Length: 363
Ligand code: SAM
Ligand code: SF4
Image (cartoon, rainbow, N blue to C red; front, side, top):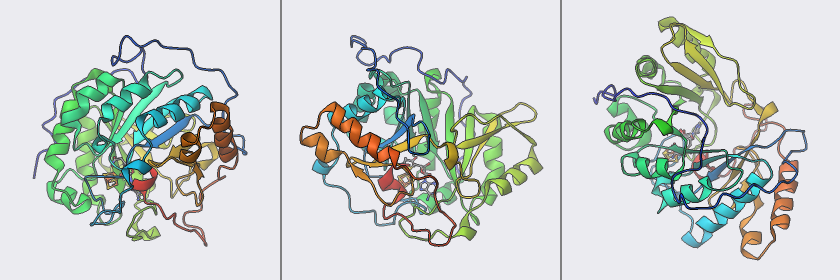
């Protein structure tokens, strides 16, 4: 087994971008166009967009992709950098200033740091973050930080090499930890959050190692309840290891103190009572946080989704490619967002799992 405890300590930096990013320092920063903010039909303000930059991935996590992979989108179907930049710029002009880049695995998209740099410079983009499996961070961390990405989530489901392999179907833990090490050396990249999907029968044994990890290193370890978005349709309620169960297990090792929840936050955050480190619990199944959800999503081929569990979506690619004006595109977004689902129905009778897997949505 690889020791996860070979990372150097480093100090957390600021959470928001305090100055324009380094990439393209000569670029002119224009003020954001002032338009009416984006709200849904239930009165929720939308301020956060998750952009899937590719449906492809170099891992095959059991809770997400099938072992053989999925049928990838044709390259011409995927939004190009200019199209993504236009959509993000328009969204930023209506108050959607938190932008998370995800996938699939975003770092497998060719020239991904270039795209990050284009988005970081857009007026109104206040926070630019990336969710990654970490495998290519050794190669790309410096370029992404230089491009202006100011927050990173790195997904690691186990700190044991064999169990990591079992779940992701890739023997990649050493390289992921190396990538995390590379990233952690950049003060601008902090806080770094570690995402672990919590699955009954798998994650219980991981908890003590993650507790040590969160206490020793400046990473918030966050456990995410397993959701029915897996390609294998193996999800069942009994496989969800709930946040409450994880909380009890951690409290038995090192007591935690709950922190006030920030508006629209997905995670409940806890500090260790002795001040050493943080744990986050994301409990979408046992404690849904739909009532103040401020998020929308854009798939790699340009479908706007207003909920992870949406059964319908709105195409932006066709209007983008057929010459729609900014105002027309914004109206399409407003109409779709107006119909944003009040809540998800996971665990309720009649729940229907979306056809898309998490990798094809952009988690
Ligand atoms: N490939 C990148 C990664 O794994 O970080 C980004 C995309 S991945 C779809 C985004 C996040 O969704 C990851 O943290 C992953 O663990 C999580 N995820 C995927 N499938 C999930 C599921 N069925 N339930 C809960 N979380 C899931
Ligand atoms: Fe790939 Fe992320 Fe899905 Fe794992 S969770 S298969 S790394 S997209």
